[in-house]
Image (cartoon, rainbow, N blue to C red; front, top):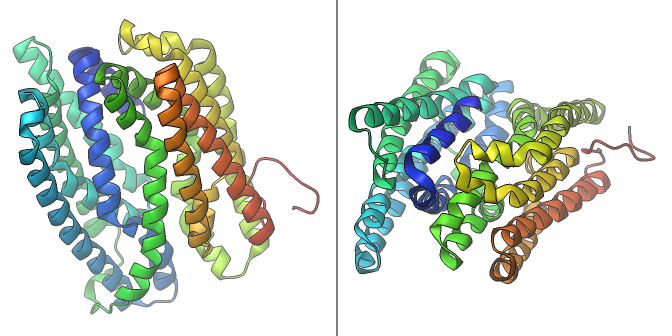
Length: 413
């Protein structure tokens, strides 16, 4: 996490607020393509692969891995082709820097999708630390080294295009490392020697609601940046992006819990062990909250000073940071609601909740951004985040019969 944030601070310092805004505006669009391209397969792997391994169904384990990469290859090719066509068609509407930045960014799509599939496989194999080495350590470290070397040799401001090329190289190195860790260090030997068996229709049937959930989560994570860049300008998008990245510190503990506990949630639920599942979710939300509470207070009290590390212009995002941090805190104390829904067979119901919150998020952004600028976007995102977390928590308490939140209610263990 330190590497990730240091790389963002270095980017902001080397690029300036305008180029930084262009970079993240384009990256936000690429994130949209990646969510669509992975089709929820990273979560599907976490649902089925632990089950197949626990039942010694090696043919199915090999099959789901192979099919995931095959589908990812096809979807990457389609998205890359559509992106190239759209970029070439819109050349007249972009300046030279914008055009080259977008064109370069398109080649991130397959690298990013393959990395997410590999990460999902490593998490399914209960290798959470290994799953983060690629995009958690190697990618930001590679970006730091490449951009630092460029600045040392050129002693000039880094453009959005240069940063995108550096990011592309760093992602390629990260993906190579993740694939090596999966194949050489994590896969059971029985999977490597088994003949693939495919249940493609079952896997796709499970993945489609996950795709919908991921798409709506994407709205929560990136719609505000995209809409700010479109309705205001990329400079405001850059300021907001810095605040948004800093606010994710509040939910880091929950992210860690989700990475470690998700395969166990699936196992315990399908083994009909509700008491153990309740104990696991309670432990997880307590761990995440114990990290989030002091972090949130620090972000509220010293947010402007922390944003100043990105550059003095970014201090204008302090109010947005406070609002996003509040939304993140509610998300943490609500527990791992999204993953619990997906791992316990309630992914379709979760999709309905996510759809409603995404529509609300877009409507609020459309109304509030023209009136209040980036603070309006932060309020819109925080409000929709709070509402869907609370709604999912109550649904889980009533229908899954476990309490995912930090709080204890009558009748809950």
